[in-house]
Image (cartoon, rainbow over all chains, first blue to last red; front, side, top):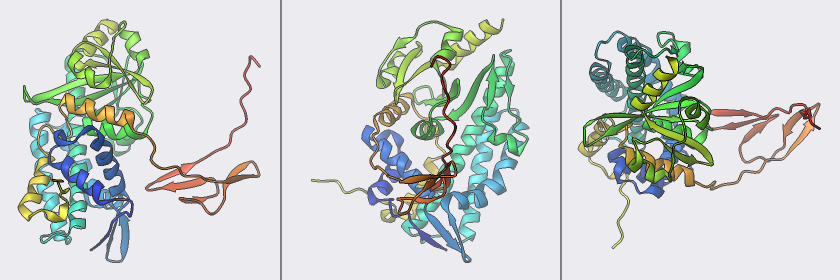
Length: 267
Length: 98
């Protein structure tokens, strides 16, 4: 197996990937963009095996997504404790995946390039798994809470790529892990009416969810939020705050508050 | 004293295993709120680092990129990594108020 790194992926990018992978909290603000950009540049690196050349993205699709993703989602949909059992299943698949990749030639002693390929595959596998665990858990929670919503059908492969994850009272929504949200926010205009993002509270050792909305979606369910700089937002939560991202106003509220407002609207 | 940036080739096998294991920790991918908003603030402040200029003509009502181009470009399409950008010309929309 030969690996050809994207010439635009510098040593500084690779160091940022390593620092981020070890501990996201260790990144300084100005290092974040380098780290996120570095993962994009990794996508265009190439793997050559048995005469076939693939980008890291294509390698991931063939070696990780195709054999494991659909079966994992089916397993999730059949679980009672999606978050607990789901993460255990994701870890089991990660172990199997590492064994598969080792058998395909990615075994120690690994070169720096091979480690980057393994890092890319495991980073995106865990991001995928955590994203879908959260998505299924939120669908279950909304149903338990009595909120009326329409969700895409995760049992159908093609529905994974539907433009919206769910619709609530005519508002189009997307559910994302924090990292998926950051990768999206960097590249694309945020077009959904709302995004449910999973954060993690290290003090309480539990997931903490927020809903990030277009101002129009917030207007539909409530009034004026506090206006804050992005880095002040965390101190103001759980009060609703309005921040600007690339000139676009976004309202951030706690998930439970959002659910209360939606329930009131629907009743 | 300057700190050298450590890279993947510098790690022992055990240290690399720790990196791979860290992705599954609870605070990775689901970030702590302060880390998430710091990252979002960095994205907000990000400025384009590179300008890519393309030249094009219009042939039979369709945009046609010219060589040389800074990325793979053919006809009205540009290939950017694993993405294909297709630029379409549409008739001018005349405002009703005009």
